[in-house]
Image (cartoon, rainbow over all chains, first blue to last red; front, side, top):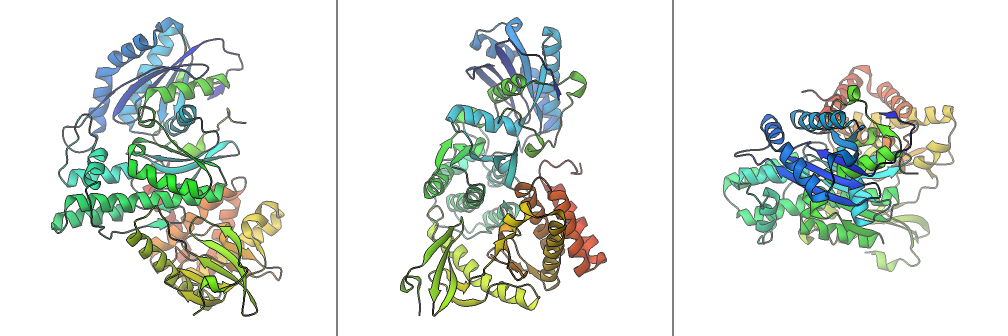
Length: 342
Length: 222
């Protein structure tokens, strides 16, 4: 990213999110109002996300979602000041589709382009929507599991998964158990429903290493237990949730104590889970901190978070020239200089 | 049996995430009482399993660390039902606090020593499990103590040793971000002087492999 050096006088930023299975478009004003947040999700017929299929989906729905967002916001394309897009991390084909749309729009309209880190965007929209100022953020989704906090110029990663993400762990178990992803009922929600009917706690691996955790052993054990057929699915879902959520709660508590912050922010798709919310509320209370959960619309992948972070970056003089707008598949959150926080 | 409530005037020293540390006088000694308080967020059966496991294993590992030549506090008493451990109080400063203030030379020396101690632990098949600079205490006499073995284990595998050092690296990155690279290099230097270059090389390769497993790591293989 390069400094523009010039002050901006525009009003709207359009943000495009396409890092995984969602294609989202959001429109934000420069003072933090979200005018539109539209998306269309790719739902695999079978198995997990097929990157090429997801990219094809994004290309097919791009103009529809863009149109919906502009109509919802009541903004004409010519009125936009800047285009922001999710530059990484994520799946290559998906990211590239969004980036292509963003580049085309920016050059057609003759306005600047700004590449945004997907994880930073989750934290920023969370802060905007909950009013959290300087939180320890637990970001748990299908592709990410990390605990971050701001420390001298960057969001530092205090804890993270050593292998698979929490959402991924739940999804894979759900598919192994024969559950199907349906519109309006993601696999995680299906697990949550079953877990609420669980009664017996099956002991599974609990692996916390320092402030990091490992979920692959837990997934294998839960899956094997299911295949053996000696437990009810409700009990296994309950046990899987209890173990996995206790682990992320433990590392969040450790980060909270270590970073000495006074707020905890929960975001990402798994943030919707009520049991996880209640566990985090308990530790937050014990440490006299404030707990907030990002509303689901802004906790899952969405265009608004990219639009808003685009505003923050652009207002601080950051733009991404087209020849530097290649996607970064493994762009870690702690590699981003966050210039808008003093 | 002495339990926590029989000890008068225990002063809360630190309320950590995992345990509370109390400072107290116990039979004329200054002691630390480490109590793993029940965690209300976990189901009781799981909570009890975790707390008693860690309470039993920590003193065992601390004892074995001594045989490996790494100073750890003396254990006076272990009470499993309370999940409490009474141990020697170590006068000194956390390495976390020293490292940021120390001169370049002192920092270098200290990191080399840390690496040597980790090497000694690994040579004896011990994994610390939470190698942060808050868990190392430097005494005024210059002894380097390792504390908090609650997440440790007995394990001679390369994998466990790699993760142990990877966690050390991560802790340096998040807490000492201004000079973590130099620190970690010195730690590895001290480490390899103890375990030998051949073993050290294998562990370094393992660390790289562990990092590549992470989700969004630049070096990750396709």
